[in-house]
Length: 282
Image (cartoon, rainbow, N blue to C red; front, side):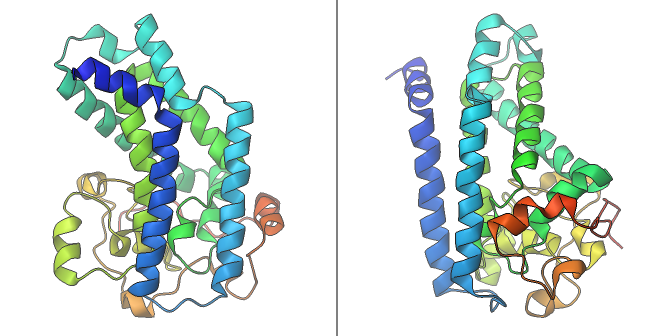
């Protein structure tokens, strides 16, 4: 089977591939965090998870309705029309795929930093951080307006880069499943975590980013690979109080109960959350 045939098959089955990976990751990491929990949860599990997953369904419907082509469809169009940076150079296909995935991941890192730095954007993104616990369902917990805005930014990046559509598909698949892993309440053996965090963001790495301590929230912005935080000065190895002692969430919402879809949708209308703009870790 030729590489072209494989690429065509992947693109033809893109929704099924991404959906299967997301559902499989949700079930796998959800089971693993129950078997090997890193921290005790502070709120009732089922109510939190039902609300978080209900928001995922709402976001999926909004994207399908308002942005039916999405990133992969836009990448197919850009590739056919010869748009973007990749159309202007003649690189080996394998290199194009690797560079496409890495450049998109770097861009998403930058977008994440931006959503912390700009007050209006932080007001949307802070709903993700308002979860008082962190587990596999926290990964896709984002406000619909942030999801739509992020998709608009992503579509612009896809057109500007002109990366192969298969590279965009691979990136989208990774972005769908790896945040489920690195948001999970999963205890990895120390040696496994030490080696794994050289190539992907692990739960212990990303959990630091959800700390109530603003110095820690301003670190570890990566979603898929850990290299951008290390290279760009936003890396923090461990929380100051340890993973068992750290507090998750935002100080404004520790005493409340931010566990309903209505509460999450209304979040941007509430009092602006405490600044969590990016600064170099102390």
